[in-house]
Length: 252
Image 1 (cartoon, rainbow, N blue to C red):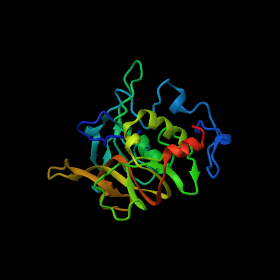
Image 2 (cartoon, rainbow, N blue to C red; image 1 turned 60 degrees about the vertical axis):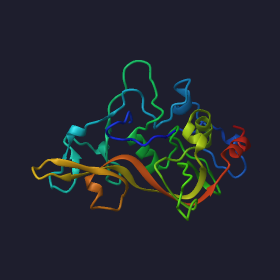
Image 3 (cartoon, one colour; image 1 turned 60 degrees about the horizontal axis):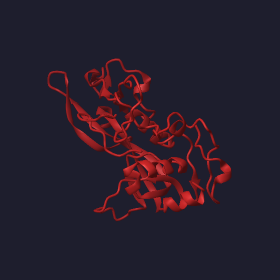
Image 4 (tube, helix red, strand yellow; image 1 turned 90 degrees about the horizontal axis):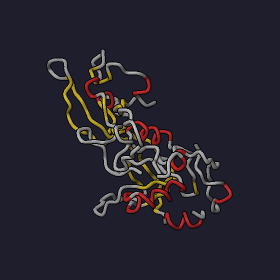
């Protein structure tokens, strides 16, 4: 699952769930089972949907240019797939290296992570999410110095939601998930992006200003100058849950 935040200068970044409805605990609505789930069937190792393979590095930086109208940035050869439906421009990723696939678990594929968050689909299998009366399941970054007085009722995260079967796999293999608080969220909302901000230079070129960890989709002044690296969601009406108890109740 997701762990380290992507950096543009050092990043090696970058369907249905396989649980059958009959194994669900009371109150849990599960997606239909599908043995073709890409998170657990394409390889003997669990490779989440948002995990890059060796070679899938950020690319295309040299193709980022000012828009023709001067109001933001674009790729010189931009196509519709470079932007999400909220208008954010996403960094591109190179194809994986030839040969045996080697997952880079400490990184994420920016575009896939953004898709999973925007569509509220599982980051592990890109499938439908199970929901309880307490909401959708998220792992969030542990923070012993957290000063948010509204926590856990309000939280912000770069990590897309996860279904129960993929949560089980994550707890077996992912140090982030093993330490992260598990939340059920009644009102998860794609909120914006984390990325790099540009501004026009004096000679008509672009200058990289800085990384910005919270650019909301509604900020129509800032968003056009951003290149997204990770998504950002606002989680409200949250409840801390015992994920291992949920897995046991589901027979996982």
